Image 1 (cartoon, rainbow, N blue to C red):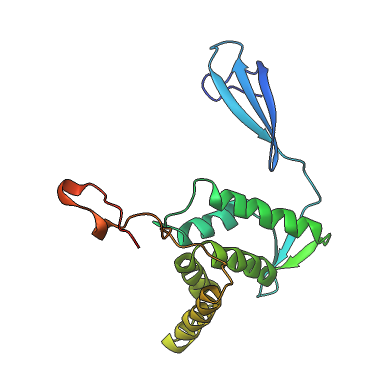
Image 2 (cartoon, helix red, strand yellow):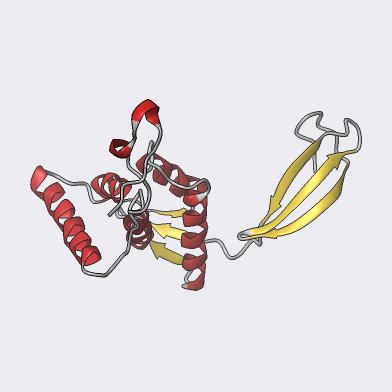
Length: 184
C-alpha cells in the first residue's frame, strides 16, 4: 500500500475494524510516519447493468452515488445517509444473484429509498430518471407523494417530520431570540 503523502510502499496497520461495507484499516507510513485510512471490500462477481438502449456496462457505485448526491443537494440529510443508501442498493443487487440487472431495477431501488428519506430529493431524482416530458407527469409524481403523505397522517409514518412536535419552532421564540416552550 503506497502512502498517499510521500508515496512510500511500506506501511504498518495500526487498527482494523469492520465497517458496514467491508474492513477499515488505519495505517502508518514507515517513512513519513503520517497516518491514513484504507477500506477493503469483498470483491464479488462483477455486476453488469443493462441500459435501456441495449448496452451493458459494469455497475458503478460512484456513478450511483453521484446521481444521488445531485438529487439530495442542499437537503437536510444525516452525514453518510447517501453512502449507506448506495451500500444498501449494492448489497441488495448482489443478493439477487444475477450477473446482469436492468437499470430500471437500480433506479427503482434508489427512488424507493429516496422516497422514504427525503421527498424533494425523490422528486428531483424521479424527474431525471423517469424523463418527465411535461408538467402533467410531474404533477402525477407529486400527487402520488401527497397520497403517501395522507397515508402517513392516517398512521403510516414512512417519513418523520423535520422538526418533532415537542421542539419549539422559530415563531415560538421569545425576546432576544431565546426559545420559549409553548404549552399545549
